[in-house]
Amino acid sequence: MKVEVWADVVCPWCYIGRRRFETALDRFAGRSSVEVQYRSFELDPGAPLESDMSLDEHLAAKYGISVEEAHRANERVARVAAEEGLDFHLERAKPTNTLAAHRLLQLANVRHRRPAVEERFLRGYFSEGARLSDLETLLRLSTESGLKDDDVRRVLAGQAFTLQVRQDEKEAASLGAEGVPFFLFNGVRTVSGAQPSDFFLRVLEMVAASSSP
Image 1: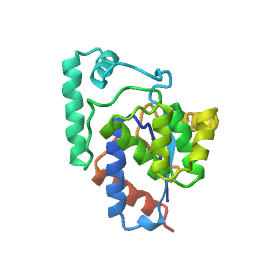
Image 2: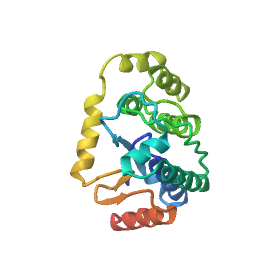
Image 3: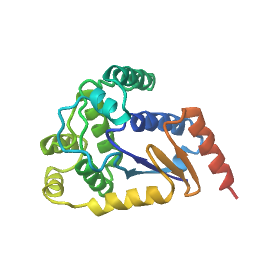
Image 4: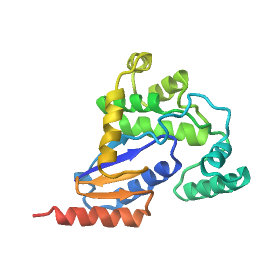
C-alpha cells in the first residue's frame, strides 16, 4: 500500500496529523507493506520571508479575531499537540515563507532522508522557534538531519526543486485538497485533516482489505 501525505512545515495540524498517522501505522498489522511518501504543500505561497508578527497576531489578522482569541486558540492547539507527545512553544514561532524549506525537502526525497528532515523542520519551528526562511537556519537543520552541507548550499543558492514543489501542489489541487494535512491511500481514498489515530487505522485496514485478492 502507498500512502501519500501532503503537508506544510508551519502547519500545526500537519504535525499533529503526522503523529496520529504514525501511531496508527505502528498499530497496523500490515505495516511492513506500507510505503509512505511525503509531498509538498504551501499554505501561504505569498507569505513574506520575514515578519515581526507573532503567531497570535498572524492568526488574528487571518481570521478577523482578536489577538486574545487567537492566543486561546493557539493554546488549545498546543494542548492537543501535547496529547500526541509534541512539545509546542507557539510563542516562539514566527510566520514565514516555506518555499526554500520545501525545496530542501525535495532534495531530501532524492537522498532518502525526507522523514528525518521534515521532522527536524517541524520540531525546529514549533518547539524551538526556528525561522524556516532563514538560509543558515535551514542549513543547520538540514545537516543535523542527515543532508550534506554542499548539497544543501547548492539548493539554497538557486531555485532547484521549485518545479517539484509546484507539481506536488498541482496534484493536491487536482485531488480536491483545499488544505493540509491531506492523505491519499493507494491512489483511491483521500482523508483530510488531523484525524484521530483510530480513524487512520480503520482506513489502513479498509484499504488493505479492498486491495486483497
